[in-house]
Image: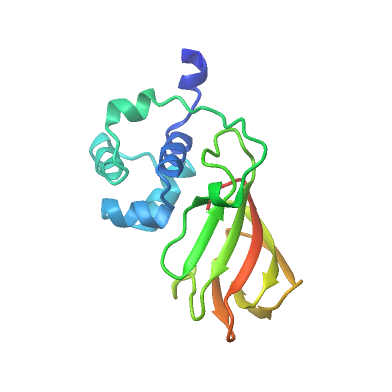
Length: 188
């Protein structure tokens, strides 16, 4: 990659790339760096420009040094097909989020196979991010809350919404729930 192209990678985009390369969600990085989720989200959206000290603290949560961060050159993934065992796990606890591909650089969409164990959810606090997302329930039942709207979906049911609206997913019923979803751009 040329220096000009490297310089074109803005700070927020670069932070998202190294965070995703480390397999961390915004929430996980915020916890590790002892900052709020919104801090990470605002930086990645280029709506906040952190001081060098604040950036260093955030990068310690990955962990990556400042020089490595600014010299990072993303390698676009060239794979086309992915075996089930090669999907990248980015979830935790009772929520498994298996991502197609490991490096989302240069991609405009994130695809996930989501599995919610009995009683699992994405958390009581609803979250939002700058994207659009949609999915189809493959098995089980899931309660999806988007803003003031809430609905329980079952096999074959789908959803599509503006991800900036705070949202939450919660498994309901006696069986785990599986969903195939997509998010564009990949800002989850």
